[in-house]
Length: 169
Image 1 (tube, rainbow, N blue to C red):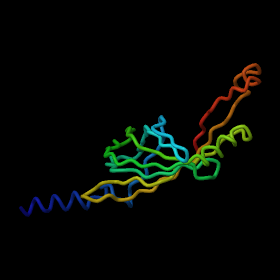
Image 2 (image 1 turned 90 degrees about the vertical axis):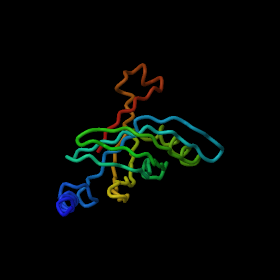
Image 3 (image 1 turned 120 degrees about the vertical axis):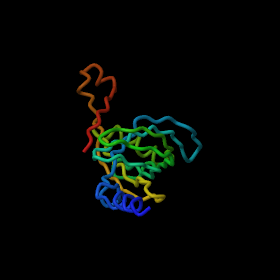
Image 4 (image 1 turned 180 degrees about the horizontal axis):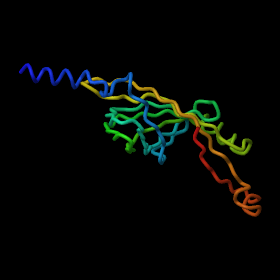
């Protein structure tokens, strides 16, 4: 019995254990989304979320809470309460739900014709499950989508066709 307690103590106290102090946040990308419902003042989206983890330990995520800012303004927020283990040095997929309101959506559509790029920021908290707890691990990523009509050639660019090219920071 004493040996069992010693082994348990060594495993829990080991520096390789995933704790909020040494867990790096996972990368967070929206792989795809689809409109779930729309009413006059708000829209709800189903999201496929791709999580990446570049550390040497797998992390058990018990949920996500995130926000999306577009051009420096709040655009959408989302939640996920699915348990997923993100393997070490690998990716994992999960689903979530996002919401936005009509005024945010309208404001961003009006900006598309004015700017040559769209800046975005994904921020939030991943919940890492360990020993019956859900420890918060914040994440914050920025990037931009370039609108590149010149890359399509003169005939397509004059027709108003735009190409979106992500460039993460």
